Each structure stands twice: as C-alpha cells, then as structure tokens.
Image (cartoon, rainbow, N blue to C red; front, side):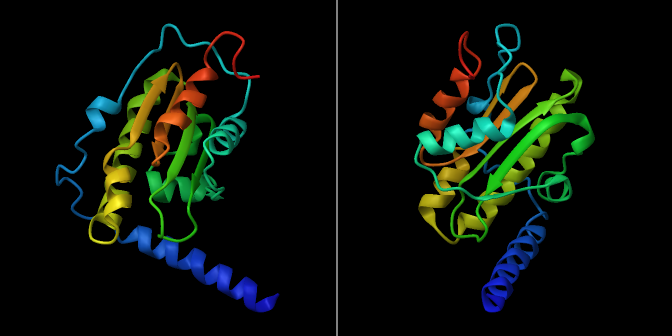
Length: 181
C-alpha cells in the first residue's frame, strides 16, 4: 500500500512538473483548427440541469473514454490560467501521466463577459498539450491539434479526444429541450 502511494505521488509530481515547463514560446501557429472549432450559440441555449461534473461523467461514459484525474481550483489556475472566482461551476479531467493527450473540460462562467478570458485559457492549454506531444506521439499530437472549443450560453466546452464528435454530441444534448436530465 505504501509503495503504491509513493508511486502515485511520483506520477502526480511528474505530471505537474512536466506541464509547468510547457509555458514558454507558445505562439508558433500550431492551432490549425481552433477557429473552426469555436461556436457561439448564446441565444438558443437551454440551461442544462446537470452540473459540469455530471455532464463530463456522462460524456466520457457514453463515448467510452477512461476516467482521469480532476483538477481543483489551484491546478486549474496552474494548467489553464483561469481564475476559479469567475466560474460558477467547472470540471476538468486529464490523464495522470503524459501518455495521452485526451482532456475534457466544462466551464460555466458567472458572467458572460468572462467567456473570452476562459477561451484564452483554453487556447493556451491546447497549445501546451500540442507542444507536449509534438515530438512524442503523432496520433496524440493530431488529437491535440484538432481540439474542440464550443461555447453555449455561459458554458464553454474543451475536448481533446479521438472521440471528440461523440462527446460533443452528448454535450450538445444537455442544451436541448428535455435534455440534461
């Protein structure tokens, strides 16, 4: 049990330290699909009845994605540069080790004026993930380059996954009438 705990802590520290080193020189034009992936549909969005955590749990379960570690307010600031004070709700899931670029996050802002700051934090994070996998794993790098950024009402979705389409479809169902329950 003690060895397992030490191993787990070592992996967590390695992830944190590895991610901290990725923040330099980010403007290299690697986000080829980011403008295509943005979609603002603020007028027709129905308010979901589920929390961000419940939505991500359903999305990952229905798309057959593994469960990852969740970020708290401190690690949210470190990885995304987003101040949790502007958020009403959020859930971010990422792998514990840098073996996969898969990542999913839902942010619900308190005020729509903060959406651009949240989107900027997401774009920064996408660039960091791309850099991490650019020279490591081609398939994971492609996933990271083709991330999804989708805004509906006060909600912002971020997905890096080979099953992005399935996860996005489930997410969008939360905003339909009779959806999200």
